[in-house]
Length: 103
Image (cartoon, rainbow, N blue to C red; front, side, top):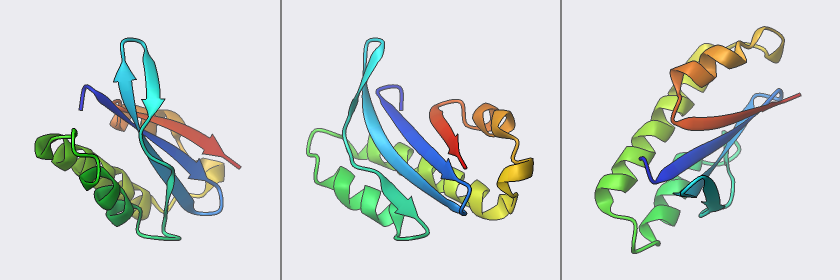
């Protein structure tokens, strides 16, 4: 996943959004739109989008989707409210991802 960056928006209203960027030197370029969980199936939406980009190899797709699964599972299992959300521990747990936390 060194070439890619999963970006998450963690909303207070108990949803998250995820997008994927391509890393180019010290910058990133968006590859996907934001997909929302649980409003829709962000994992499935991301899978379909990634499989439509023919230059992303299957190994990278699996790594990206596995990382997305880990974050979604953590989000579902954490059951923490925004008031006691430990943003720093989430960033430490998933250092290959970028997070923004919104009220």
